[in-house]
Length: 548
Image (tube, rainbow, N blue to C red; front, side, top):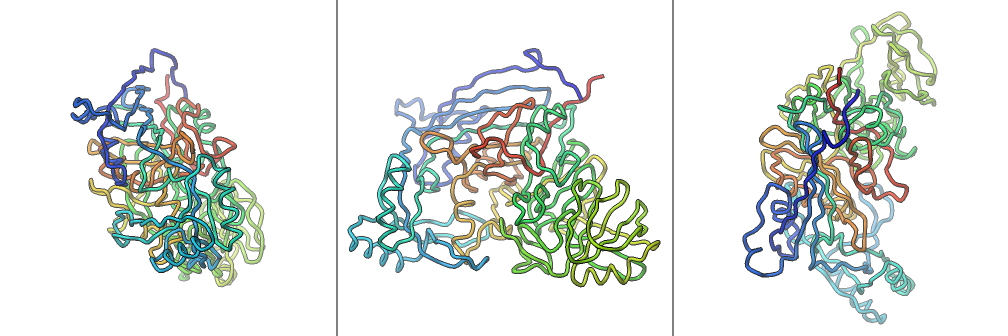
């Protein structure tokens, strides 16, 4: 597809906004920041009183096409004073994985005892109270206490200070306080794309660029498609230990075809009719293989049999619930591979059946080879292999039916121009902040080591929302950049920011080093990976209408 470039299409204007004074210790203060800082919202009248406002922002707005606008801004807090510190952790065992871990937050008895032992060893600890974020499905009030030592200008100084503490027998971590939810952020660099489907004549779609087993950077896909805007999409397998790199670890559908199954009922962005309609909902998927009167539940599409990244599938161990960044396992597992799986099929114990376009069995045998361009492959291990051996007979038909439902039980029917990208958790629902962090497996109230930094601390984030005018909001905030760089959002800050933009529905997409915002095929944000833009599983691409 083609699109015009240059000044005739892009109008640029700069907005400088004064913003409201915020209480430095209130995590949700970003809601007020965002409302005042984003173009279109009015500054707080207190800015005219002559008192110095600690929060300032500067925004640049670009109209890339009718119905498509990009805003780029930086929010700064003059009163933020982050530093490096030494956190003393409580040694523990992860409830989810059984692996050794460290608790940053624990009970008062541990905190008081640890502080006393540190003072006896010649150190000067401080004990800080940590509150639960206002998630919709976790406890409220005090989460626990943490123990820290010192404040240092550089990471190297904090690391040096931690060494004698570690040598004295304590478990330590060197941390940047600018990532703490109870401290104001120093800098937050933000990109916002707004797509109005009533005006924009192009398409908006999630894509794996034709091969679900290949990782690509969003900007490289954007250049292929001629996209105006691109952001990274859902969670995906990033290491061989988690399965097949590049494949989605949650629900993924492209061009109306289900290419990855859900990890429990997690948040998903539905881009229907090529971007004419948008929806955010918690979606779950099921699939069944049938041969004559026999049937067997399919638990995976285009993934390594027996290995389930982010968990969330029936029969999985150690959990059938969604657990972010945890790998679960299935000993009896039936997986279907589609033509979108462009890599060599996984090998190993078990059985596979190769099907033609009608679903007739072409061959049954050892696992391996490739998916035929006009067919599919079923691979089974454990009892699923026994089922294939018994019922997948050459020349006989095996059908695979899939269903996607929301939590209300409504079936989502995919059309040829529909796509779905999925991550977690939900941020805004029915116009209210509603972060279901525990239900979607990103925190665990019974194991405070799980998800603490990922969810409760500031991180790079990619967010999607829908406002009350039906417009799609694609948002990124850079993070993991200390010493005057962008620090990111907590999940609650992300929810508050999306609500301040007018979102009535919003979700968290993949973030961290995956967070990417590209304009005209050029990287516009500053990813946190030292190597630069990360090759990811899928992306959301905003493509202009083809010129004729």
